[in-house]
Image: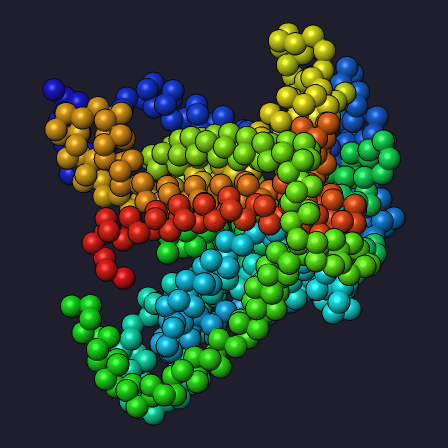
Length: 299
Length: 310
């Protein structure tokens, strides 16, 4: 009797709690907290393992009898020093950054115009073009890399960062356009109409009215595109030959993995430092990530 | 009601109509140039290359279906098709089940909910190659932390040969793929779950529905459209996966984990047989089209359910 009374008053005072009052605590532990803890542990463990390996001295790395593998006794920065001063790692980091930033800006610029044209200029055939953009998003890099390698070679940009800057927009433009179309659609027509009545040109409308209102969309698309190009692998692996033009994922895999003796410490340090920039970016813009991810799926 | 602003818009911009096509064309130009040069053209070129015997450094000649005839007799190719289908189906089912479960957990009233949501998405944010390297180290044949833990618990006697044995290797790469794919499915489905009004659940529970019945007859039907789309994306990306396999096994042992994408790369780039590699890539297209059609009908159903006409 009392529990129903409590439930009622809860329902009156706190709607956010929903129906969880129906579950008592022990039940919640088994059905909610325990599985959640397992999920979080499994999803985060590889990162912990990466980080702990990166600072482990080589002696402890494979000696599981004398040292607990889950902890490190005397952390060392040797692997990181080796990575930063004796390999081309800083160069790869710079290449990745440069390629990601350039291709993101190129794609964003092209996508803003494209999405605006499809959504608001309403030229003949805007709908089919929009659908084609969506289909282009579904074309995976794994079926394009061979012909693209052929084209890149013919264009004479093989083994250069330009090859990546020009090819990454193939998967970034469809995604950004699709996402921005959704954002532009949510901006009321009336704003544009009144600007048109006041004699504004299309260009002025785009720059002065639409873009300022679509800033969240631009941020979402931008950081997502940056992450996608940071994570790209198959094009970078195929189009880049020389060590100084490699990106982080390719460089770590092809240059730090040598022979049969793996230097796990520096390998994991390389993986850690290659992940940090996107993780930091992500931690600042979590909500934008989520909205762009779900936005791309929902539309 | 929704047609009113549209008609007004057309009325005010009738004089612009001729101009709009020009404007639209100009605005579309940058995106179109990129996509035609680096997407549509390569797609066509890839299909053409599949019909030639092009090698690296030598332009090929048209040889008809010879590449495909060769592949049809090549048991490694058929093994890779089998592996791809196995990998995609098992990984997608697991990703869906675990992702949905995680989404349902995240939809509950948890303390620090947004913190958990942020953490869950991490595996998806980190470059696949780099997290795959961590898995490579976790799957090490001698110093695997998994083997060590299981040995400490007394469950196994010797270290597991994760990537050296065909069956183990398949399980290991699928596990790594599921690990990376869960966040995407979970976060997307969570967004879908949050659009389901709580009042529906409450109404169902007032009618005496158990929690399973609430899930089965309220949550799941409401979620079906978004599940269709999310899973199409998931299937598409799993089917064309390359990075994980390339890092963990490079297709081995004895081609047990070769996917079509990795085989295409191996034959095309290090092997130099661009034509044959392109043919393998083209062989993936029918499967992808199937998945896209599935997505298309998933979207159709969504519009119908919402009663929208757009």
